[in-house]
Amino acid sequence: MKIVNYVGMTLAGLILSACSSAPLRQHSFSTQLQQAGLTADEISLVMQPLFQGNSGFYHRADAAMAPASTMKLLTSTVALATLGPDWRGSSRFLLAQTDYIALQQQELQPQPSFTLRQPLYLQAGADADFNYAELSALLSQVRALGVTTLGAGIVLDRSSFLPGRNDIGQADFDEAPKARYNHRPDALYLGQSQQVLRLVSDHKNARATLFPYWPDVKLDLSELQLTQHNCEQAKLSQLTSEFVAEQQYWRLKLSGSFPQNCQQQQSFELIDRDAALLLSLAQEWQRLGGQIHTETAVPTELHKAAHRSAHCCHLPIQHKSSAAVLLPSVPNTNWLQTAVTPPDAVPVATHLSRPLGELVLRVNKSSDNALTRLLYLTLGAEHAASLRTTNVLANQHQLSPDGSGLIPGKAPELTPTAQMAEQKIRHWLTQQGINQQQLVLENGSGLSRSERISALFLTQLLSHVWQADYGPELIASLPLAGIDGTLKNRFRQGAAYKKARLKTGTLKDVTALAGYVYDGRHRPWIFVAVVNSPKAATAGKTLLNQLVEQLAQYQQ
Image (cartoon, rainbow, N blue to C red; front, side, top):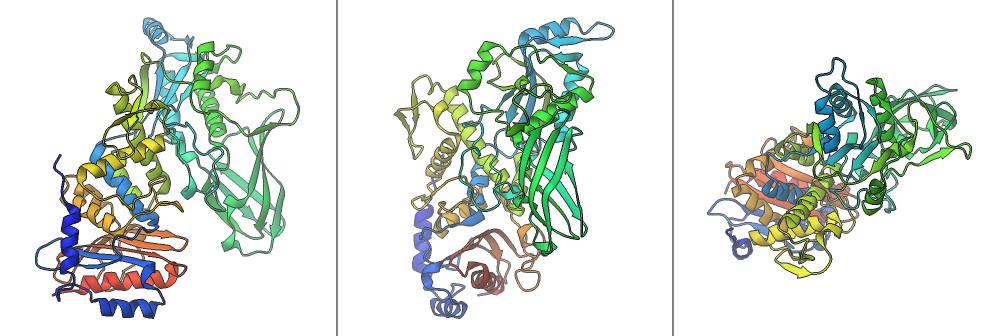
């Protein structure tokens, strides 16, 4: 692969930046900083032309800065470059080979009725579009084959990511850990593990509805306190919940406060994702006329595999008595286990996500944290799979931290997927000759207090994208000034309207913009600006808007 010397190109730009053809003078920039009440070390800025004849403007271009969501540019670029725009995630149901052969032999029966002797396998493959409706559709396909009874339960295979669930035992990022933007994805991206809670109150009572609708889940608001607080400031994700098994139903008990005469609806992870999966599988299978034999023990080998693989089915369910409570809709939680799908299992129902080229629109236009983290982990999973394919696993080697070679050590299959993702990204950056000295990665989304990046790094990345064959997909995913995404209500008036495609970044004490701006002569520039300051949300955002407008007006 050809290595482009972006560092040399940028250093040449730095030397030329003193010329009169630069879009900004240092003196005027210093004045703008002073007027904004910001110090020089609170901002990094690059304006670099993508054409010959003009020089750029650079201020602290190589400083390590908290990037917020501009970090998504790196994850989405490497995903497009290595997975390809046509890559799709998948969710599949598979049958053990012996069951599949036996089922085929019964296909000619007038009324096929078949009991699986081995588990039905649900293999999770980072399918970003998998939801409760698609789960029902896949189960319908299994039922249509003639399968009537699940004799050994269902096995969930999350093994493409390690650990299978990285949300358990992790410190909360902020005060809303279950909110959609804070979701920590696993390989089974079922409805992003979200439920929709709608809460309506008058001056005396409150009423709640939950989607997906599970008939045997009853909502208990007996400990919900109605207050006289402002309805607009109510946050349902801050309510506490308790999932309890009663004799005839599950009880979801909500506690906390909610304003009187208020109506709110919010999507968040109200019920643990494994409990939600168990409820949905049981309800949908029985709705289709299927049965589950709960007396059948899961084979010993599956138990062993479950212990070897990642944590599964940790259901935060409390029982009112010490005796097991068995419900019609959820006869026994033991029928849902975790294990690795046998290599000879046969796919019988598959759902595919939209192509990656379309998914990056969600990543960058709406700044989707969870989807970005899913793609980040997918990079790690694909990297681990490629190493296994090349027999690295057998040699007990792993990739060096910079991705340049192999070193003896822990086998790749035991390396956390997030660490494998970082290795993959750094290896790709090394191949492209992009300086990663200031880069600090955690989850690839920018929703982090530790991730760092430099304006120079983003400039080199955007310069690469401009010339790449997948560049159009990435560039089209950036919000268009004043039109869509996170820039829909920004730059709606002025020179930058429809002339800038910029990824936004917003975090406590961080504001950032990175992308492309066309100047007054319709010439393309790379624009990267990052502010790390207590004034980022106010003065910082205003200053960045001014700088984009100035570049959009520039005509020399």
